[in-house]
Length: 246
Image (tube, rainbow, N blue to C red):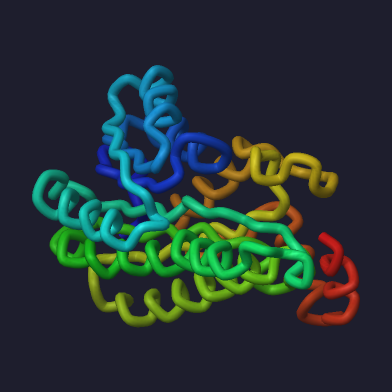
């Protein structure tokens, strides 16, 4: 059964800006029920002003107790959820020999980017496995395959997301739950201001993903990510040199 684009109930983290907001926009326009999660209430209110029918939830993915409360909220009050989109992420760019707050940054980045998404999936599987048409969508990065020197933890967490997504796809292949991955190139978002050139827009990314989603293409290598993975496969040293200074 191919994925339907309408009449879903979708939980999305980090849906108030960038890729997440564009996912909200396009799924909203396709007549879905959207539940947006963020730690920033002002950003959530701004998103709701744009899309009045969305539900908004204030939870912090950097806090393990808050993540557990989010899961329990969904299990008891949003039992129609059949799509979970793990989009929220943070990227710290710093040199470890100069950094004074490394312990905190490392722990927080791993929790937001990897630990919390995995816990959300695990916690909501009892809901997802009861649905005839359900989906997990994880957002990783081309940096999962070829890291840059300024963001070792971000790159490592995206690599972990990629590996875990693939393993979960294997685990769940005999259930009703399909597992998708969005693998973006450099996208024009607040996170990437002042970094790199040749960025694509969030709209371009989501347009391409939805085409893949509709056709059950489980790994969406978006835009230049296709070329990066090809180069990495045949000329890994060249790929490393291209991305090293990111």
